[in-house]
Length: 215
Image 1 (cartoon, rainbow, N blue to C red):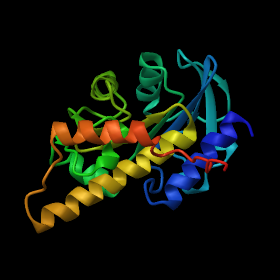
Image 2: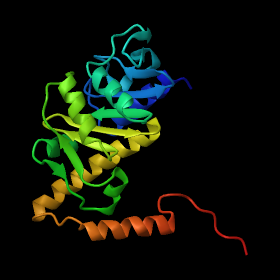
Image 3: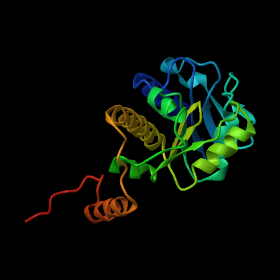
């Protein structure tokens, strides 16, 4: 499967999961010194390889008939400022709602540590601007996901699959915060509790399949 096909498949999956609606959101993956990114105006639930444009790291179109997403600068900025292989930007409902209210998403559940801890909210900036890209890159420092004030979310990964899974996890965590807040003030995990989780995860190789030892 080509990188353009992989990006299209990731966009369709995110749309099927309800994280991408209509033309809102975009997906990219790095392929050496090239970046495959969804084109602007594409209905992402129907995305095909022809709806994905291949650009250079400087943003020059190399392959594809369609103009890249208006958030190209955001994607290229993240790819240039880190070693990630894929970037997912969504307007997922719960993530976006949290980004309209909080300055960061606190750690209510230990699964959030897979994203690096509390998820920062990048300051609001007009879409498609260098200011937005810079704010998101700063919010991603030491994290695998960030929220964008009054806008949406960004998740990154070494692969498209990992970036998609992190976007899905972020949306679940945002929904959890919403539901917990309806019951009362959410109770965040302390730094000590978070450290204990990390130690336990390392000890148990948490999150990876393991074969049973042979007799």
